[in-house]
Image (cartoon, rainbow, N blue to C red; front, side):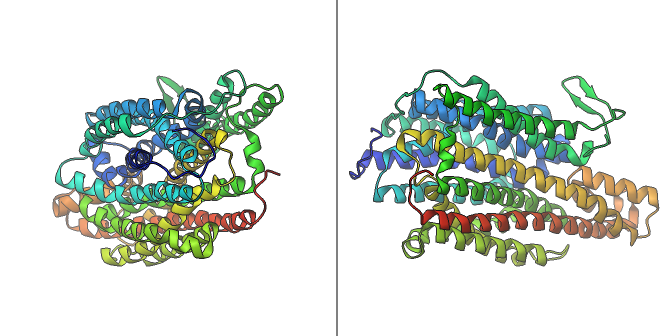
Length: 544
């Protein structure tokens, strides 16, 4: 398998290789969303607070975002198949560690190991597809790649619900072990080795460090802002025995944001310098001269923020406010998968009529309508099926947008830069997904601080009890509601338990609505970006 530009039909082995790569990709995308439905159970079992819960979800995406540029460059240099196989090995090891975790620290650390493996896998899959499939076959291959992303992301909640309900949350990680072994063996025989021609000397270590620090600090600030304070410290920050005290003149959050801005600015300056002195750079900034690449990545970032905000928020609402079990929540969220699979299969036909950028626009329009409908529909007593209906519309849009956006973004990228191009797009998606979880958690935390006390005021509980209930519900990401519901009148609140549960569920629903509206706003920004992407796709392909 060579990375040339011919339009020769792919061999049977290459099509099988695409299937194997897609399964490997699906496994790591699935792992990014499968945790969502199981999270309330994990929170209760391991006694996580809201920030811990966000890090279980976000650290995976944070490290992916931090490492993808580096691993994409390594894939181009050392061989994409080698990186894919190495990634599978690391990912399976991290999954085993996560499955046997008994503390929040161990689980978060295991998610970090999984992320390293996923960072080796993801750019290897996309750059291999970009290098192997050319001409008319390329669109079909990218359609498969995009459909796998949207399908796996949508199936994750259902799989997480089923495994959590019928086995235990540990199985959402254990399932990766046999699947990873099968994919590893299959890849040995079906995936050929490809790599880019080495044009410039050197390894951009400084660029890798700057990008990792910048992206990591950015997401850290957004996640920790509501608890640590956006400017004035609200509590101590403890990291490996080191403490940023509550008495400090300024919170760690604005400092982290400043570090992110400085690091990412220096990263861009450094990459330009590497380009001028003719040394290998982590990111070829000339890629952004292709307007389809620039607008496509901006669109992908906004969409990822919105999509992953939804995946983080909805399971918490379904389990805590509506009182569904993990399987019930998974079935509701499976409505997204139904829509995504249906539209993913028809995306190619729509693309033939409206073009890939036009199909992305249609998809994002459906996503905005679907999420907005959910936000306006949900109440503390809304029937589960009524939540599922607009999620089908959202899933239809998800399938259309994801299946066509990838190929459009990389349409004009030269084959020799496919690793960097695909890694850049994957990085943008992962930064977006991490920020989506972070923004959603921040929006939920801030809104709950307002909605829960307001809801409890109507119960007539004394101020101290109401304040304690609101604080514990907010800190536990809503798990307190489920605990009170299970205890019933035997709880410390006695006969007033049900009244408190109803009030807390109503307040949590209001907080969820605000978080969903934030997600909708980002999807709308993605729609605006897609309009510009469509215009860019009509211009000549040459970089400007």
